Amino acid sequence: MHDDFSADGWGIETLAIRAGHDRTHEQEHAEPIFPTSSFVYGSAAEAARKFAGEEPGNIYSRFTNPTVRTFEKRLAALEGGERCVATSSGMAAILSTALALLKAGDEIVASRSLFGSTVSLFDKYLGKFGITTRYVELSDMSAWEAAMTPATKLLFAETPSNPLSEVVDIPALAEIARRHDALLAIDNCFLTPVLQRPIQLGADLVIHSATKYIDGQGRAIGGAVVGPDKLLEEVFGVVRTCGPCLSPFNAWIFTKGLETLGLRMKAHSASALELARWLEAHPAVERVHYSGLESHPQHALAKRQQDGFGAVLGLEVKGGREGAWSVIDATRLLSITGNLGDAKTTITHPATTTHGRLSDPQKANAGIADGLIRIAVGLESLDDIKADLSRGLDALA
Ligand SMILES: *Cc1c(COP(=O)(O)O)cnc(C)c1O
Image (tube, rainbow, N blue to C red; front, side):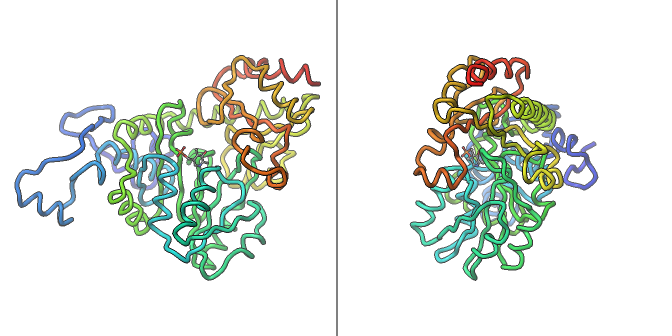
């Protein structure tokens, strides 16, 4: 009666709904939640065998939990990876990966356009333990190559980037990593396995903030790492020992989120593309950054390695900071927040929020113009989103 959904040949929509659930003796149809910190044994001998690792089975929910395992197996199936380890947040996924696979003296080469906390984690915290990070322009393959040294053990990138939708050629980056005996990790938070499968494209590891589109409704914080068994066993060791484990309740939310991820990502992407085209034609808009637009310098690459372009777009409006703020402040429907990955559309001014700590030259270098607005397009009526933006944009035009 139970099919093995780890086997090849299932469509991604089927895996998203069916993979990872080992039905219990209760014959439940929906995935159950196991809110239990520990598990009991039939005998002292069984306990001894489980603690010694001689017999599989649950011991304690910092190590394993059946609800968390269902989420891990389902996400591994979707990403096409051997194994997944879930974590308490996206940042915990990145930290656990670094603690598991790097040591003092190792180097990371990363794209400049990373999530802000990732940069702090690399520079401030990993730096304290003798792991150094060098940053390069995401799409500049010769810069990646030039930054490699014998000490480089990890390449780390987000693609497409936030908020400018720059794209890196994942197979080409994987080739550089392989040639230098380093690992390639892709933070796949923005596209999810529905729109991009980095492991198939040659990456070793996929990192997720499940907080974003995997949940999709802004309810829970969580993360995950996906990759080969051998590397993930090390990541698992960090999670079970150091403690950044995912709670069963959040794992259940994410598992149910995965069931609708395909439908949601396609709807997010379709709305974002239509909105990007509409914005590009608006007289108050100077430029739109979205890899789905024909005007995007890497549109051909994005089309080749992605099955869609995601929900996040950047637009530069007339009037610099005042212009951007007037468009944001004229909205009534959109949520003014730095968060994203929600059914609710969000709008933010990167230069004074997510990138506010950067100096002016750093902002210029990162392409964060004063007139830049980031929108993470949600699932409301597109006509309502356009009307909400029109109020400010029409006044600026
Ligand atoms: C939000 C985010 C993270 C961090 O995830 P948390 O769940 O907030 O810890 C990492 N990478 C990207 C691209 C993100 O957007």
